Image 1 (cartoon, rainbow, N blue to C red):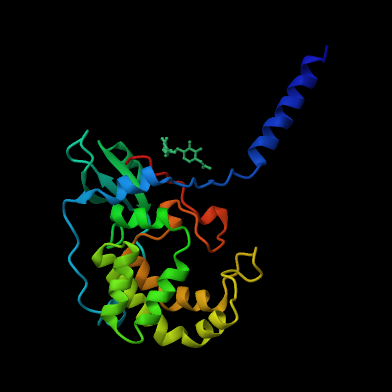
Image 2 (image 1 turned 180 degrees about the vertical axis):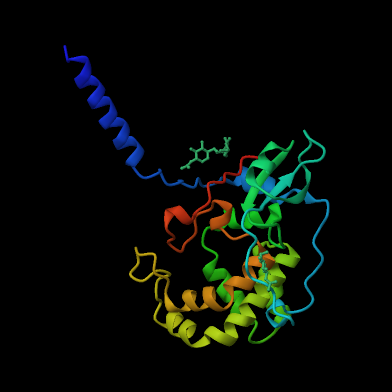
Length: 244
Ligand SMILES: *[C@@H]1O[C@H](CO)[C@@H](O)[C@H](O)[C@H]1NC(C)=O
Ligand SMILES: *[C@@H]1O[C@H](CO)[C@@H](O)[C@H](O)[C@H]1NC(C)=O
Ligand SMILES: *[C@@H]1O[C@H](CO)[C@@H](O)[C@H](O)[C@H]1NC(C)=O
């Protein structure tokens, strides 16, 4: 039988140990076809207008600083019928979670790729770098061709349009590192298991990422989804999508 004082000492050591251990990283689930097909089939009641001008050429330039807290949520106004939905930006995650029939779909305010159709594309295609790159190359020849290519991947039209402008911008600014990476088949991360992006992806993220972020709004990390580019686990938001 241990003396009570020793038990207390051991218990407090154990508690200190638990408190000091790093928070468990969020382990993003993968979603099966039942889930992503249900998301793809929903109707957005207030669709986004099409994007007819290049946001990379906007004057004055687009403010690419995110407001700190908002989240974008899917709202079902006719629960239990979930075939149609609205998107709404809430000032905080807690506010969204407290609202009825409301589910956080990604961090930051809603934008052109916040639709569940675009979420379904991200779920169904964990590796979009290759297909999107192929569409991006088509911008060199014809914008319409590139847009059709992105629509074939499954994106909503406004989301496909911001992907197209992203590709045009990257084509302008990142052609050299990207051609080199394609020819040499450089993996997304170099070295492969690091968080260091290859020079093409790094250029794309630097030159095209900020405007894409605020206009498209949905990116994988902020949606709690894994991608084919290694990212630090702490950068993937703790969000799951079981509200289909
Ligand atoms: C993620 O959020 C859920 C629900 O809010 C919580 O139970 C879980 O502990 C969180 N996971 C991590 C790794 O923070
Ligand atoms: C798909 O995933 C959902 C949610 O995790 C699960 O309830 C369902 O049983 C799965 N369906 C199939 C066919 O695996
Ligand atoms: C850009 O947006 C951020 C966040 O909403 C805001 O704090 C900042 O003042 C804006 N900057 C300009 C130049 O408008």
